[in-house]
Image 1 (cartoon, rainbow over the protein chains, first blue to last red):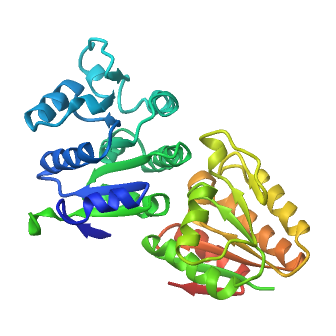
Image 2: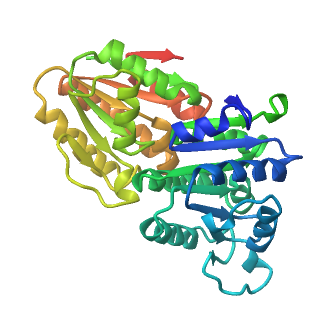
Length: 188
Length: 165
């Protein structure tokens, strides 16, 4: 696994590869994720953000606080509906739960066919493992990555380091172009 | 005719594939079975790694499951990595079409095992090796290290060589 930091390497790796998996350490996952978002927001015009663990409202508030241009983002939110009925808005499509992989697949198809996105940000592969068996997750991510390639866009899949992801990453190595471990501390 | 099983760490799979294609296949026609990525990505990646794909025939088991496919010269599509009948037919088509010495390259046994049971794949590989021997082709099958131990043990006798990376 390649170790890179925010200042050196991450941007270049995303630029040079079509499908990148970024793994970070667990304690500061949110912080690092926010940094990844800030970086991709600088380089890409239209980003589809698939969130499986934080509601759309929370992410928007976080991004605004960090002065990230939220107009660049379209959201697929798989978590809000598990706790409450959301208000329909143009910038976000809600699906029932992170377990609704068929619904997620359908919405992704619509986005890829109509929205002309430059990059898909998938947060996170670990959440899929909470809801589904590893083999189902592997097949699903293989399909998503292949779809992103077929539509000639880019994909960044974020996950946390740990035993659950270790086995999954062995398979994702075959489907992704690069697996990166964020190691920003030494360079910032 | 030689059947070789390559067992490699997953992070080195494409490095090893490119090395083998450059060193072993050289300028012989090669039937390459794409199981991990669509043919467009594989072709681009191989060429980036210095592999000349002019004499390649591709069987793409990925693209048709996620988007529409266009007919292209020397490319056949199957519906998914689960579609072993389609893969069998596509392999037969190219094996019979190419008369000179040829090479069949199965990119990822592990991917076949994600989509099919071990028993089914064991039979598929055994039949495939027998078929390629009859039709005058060398065959290479790539398997990632550390997965499906029992299956790997049971198919090893079918291969002439096992190379570990």
